[in-house]
Image 1: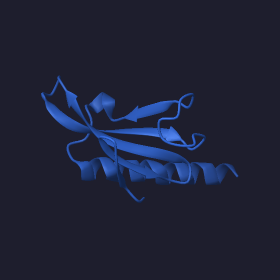
Image 2: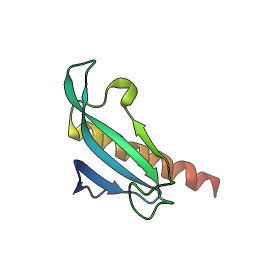
Image 3: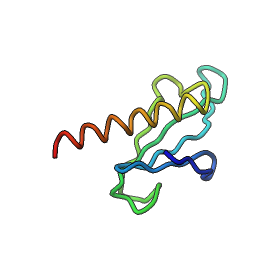
Image 4: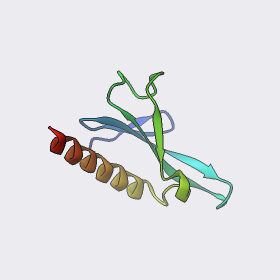
Length: 88
């Protein structure tokens, strides 16, 4: 995916969703970590109201590095594409 700077992080678009990665402070671990948010492509742009945004990695307090978060987002995008292609 082609990642571009966006607001406080990075944004990429797959065929089916937008992926936004940003740094979040997690009090539980006392550090900033990378969080992935995705929004299905029904939106005209990331953050469009009325289309839910789902956080990924929040339960594990995010990812250690930007590279790890990007790799996970790209893995999820590939899995989503495979699942949707199987249904058609």
